[in-house]
Amino acid sequence: MTDQQPASLLSTLIMFFVIIIVVGFNIYLAFRFDKKHQATNPESKPMKWFFYYGLTWGWLGAICVAVAISSFFIPINPFETNLFGLLIGGAILLLCWQYYLRRKWAFFLLSAISFNPFIWIAHYFYYRNRKPFFK
Image (cartoon, rainbow, N blue to C red; front, side):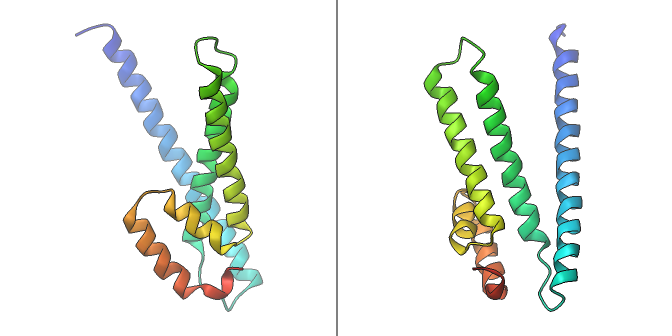
């Protein structure tokens, strides 16, 4: 047993709890946004998954941008790597903005970049059942 194990266990536990808090916060916001949406559009179907999925990708884009900006101050990292992270994070944030404007193409593009066939299938049926919601 080395001295590094307690520190690595602690950092693992901290990251686990941060992920749980972020996911819980996303779920809370998704329910809140859906409640607001249902108040203004009582005839529409619930959109909790739409809000949750967009919030999750929004956090991912924000984290990419934050890490890329902070990495500019570390002289070890190559400039191109930091710039690539900044561009990817910025592109995700712009895509999330269009997603929240309910653009069809943004919905499908955000689904496609998840590289998850289950998400693709679920979003196909989600879109098919909620076509009037999208522009």
